[in-house]
Length: 112
Length: 113
Image (cartoon, rainbow over all chains, first blue to last red; front, side, top):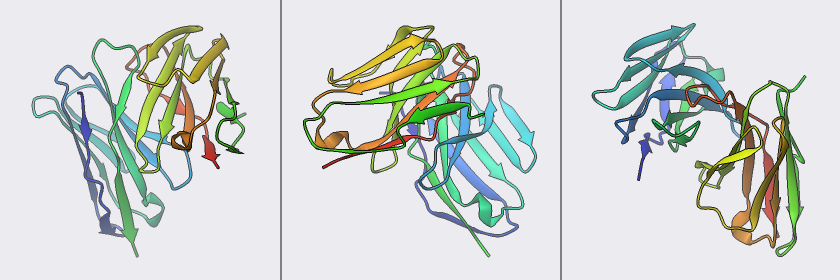
């Protein structure tokens, strides 16, 4: 069974620090990787997506992908209390049109 | 100008009843999805339609029946509701390619009494 693993947390970081969220996946053929943010009681909101090995930056967010290690991460620089949420990693399986497999999410708490 | 909208937002009903949830997207996407998020917050795909054609059908009881009248709409009908059906159901949409991000609606919180 194809799996996406995340540490459930909570991950607690002080305001202004870098938060590092990690995700591993089991299907070596996976091609597309997504990070979603979900506030309590709200819907998942797309933060970043990455397709190629390496880093992709967007504002305070950087996604990192290492297909050889089957590992994708999300870095949040200058963390703010408003970043406190659950972050979901999602992986698209190769050859399966549009099917996303989600991890269980990591809860991030940014403390003052 | 909501991109993916679902109705109703909340649904409270008795066990054994039949209910429907509606979803509409105005993003011009070709593919729509239904996800179930359980009490442990695990988000799992149920169905996916591309241009009114069913393309993903996970292991879901046949009490759940999706219907797509056109590519902008995807409804979910649930027969004989059970306690275990209590969850949040999210609709999402994307362009047809699996590489494209999916955009989620606000969710329908279903509670079975």
